Length: 633
Image 1 (cartoon, rainbow, N blue to C red):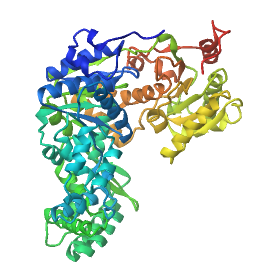
Image 2 (image 1 turned 120 degrees about the vertical axis):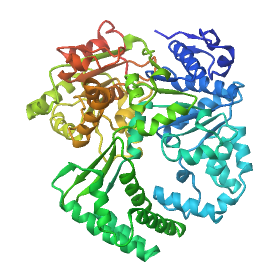
Image 3 (image 1 turned 90 degrees about the vertical axis):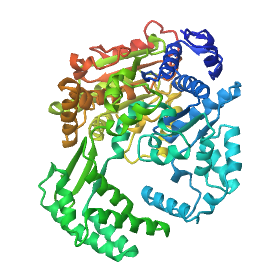
Image 4 (image 1 turned 60 degrees about the horizontal axis):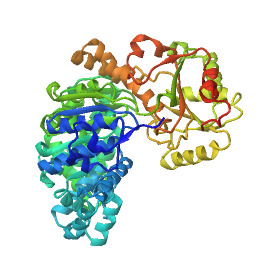
């Protein structure tokens, strides 16, 4: 079954001007409703939160609606991504729009540090910031001092990938980030990271591109990542070794500041030793410890001295922990709403600051921008993300679009024979999981991926699998893997597909279950083992308590505990069907998923079907009723 494609101009509610911006000849079934909703939301100054499964063509729809409006209304589109790798499709979509005669000007930009061509720049983020600001202020950076007009002209004549922009700026002898910011003033759309809007970087970037929030149309890609990314911005740790290192570094720039930090290090270390285990503490616990270590100066004086010493070292090209330390101490004292403060006692103890409520940083943004589109294949439920991000109810447009792919190409099965519930974990349960996984893998004609709730459970099942799986080669994810190893896994899966397939073992929430595109039906089956609830740590319990106070008992439990686990399952399950031609089976091995309180948390287009013989069901899916056909792999 092929999905129906029509001209964009034939979609109800889509004006010819919008259709002319669409980057393809035709719009697929499923895209039409999304495009019409996006156009209306942006026109009316609303925030559209869209659960749009893979295949909806989210990037093309969002850029068409946002850029066409922005060009007409004098706004700027900021297309935000959580990863640099996600810039590519946005830039390619903008290039398609230009190739079809729609004269969009787009600029691709990443972190200033990642674009820097100055060989003397330090590696740390805050150290780099101070180094850069110092050299720009004193006009001692030759790259920044050189005019950027030639590079800006290139960047506005053609939509460049950021790597191309960096090389163009290098050839022109100018700072790539400076060129990107100047080009952004003339742009219709800027592709950038979440941090450009949802961190203090915003206060430096928007004035440079001469745009207030009111003139911005936001598009947030993979928006299910946004709350956690915002939380991570106000997350940090402090231990005694860091303070000792900081005092030594400070002495090199300011002996007096180094002496003050040495006293603070002793006092903070004593406070850590006095803590028994891990516990929640008040703001004053660390503030008082810092002030006890100071002689003759106050907390603000310390912050100023540490920052100045860090800037002095940065101007010399010397990396240090001083900028990070000053920022941590400032946040610990000054951020009072929606944060958790923890202390871990003992010799290796530390103080930790964790942001619980992302709306502290995001609600102002959504209150002031003209409109926004937040989209993801797992933005489920949209209402939860609107609540977490502090989006005003009157401006919300919540949508869950159906899966655009043929229903017969996917089957979702629940195997109730197994569970990873903590009280039922045992050697016999791990053996049963291995047996059920083998029952899925053996009849599957291509590659199978199984994702576990933790490396510990993966390892326990792996021991049993080594004696049961014979036909498929095992590929096992390691915690230390990077991009190179993930690339090799894809190469191995492509090679194994022609030889009966392999069995890939990974973890839910990891890069293989969320950050890799298994295009071309590379996976014929995905198995999700268990329910990946977060361990009941102090942080998780504090988050649940905070959400319960803010949203009520039921939503507090679901927002903090249930939906994050469900979305990890949906991310992993979504790895196998990447186009309308792909065909695969999804097996959820967990009896708790059939609990009505949990089952109702899945989106409507993800029906759960319990089965007693999962191997037989898999065999029927691939061979039943079409035994004479070659199996899909």
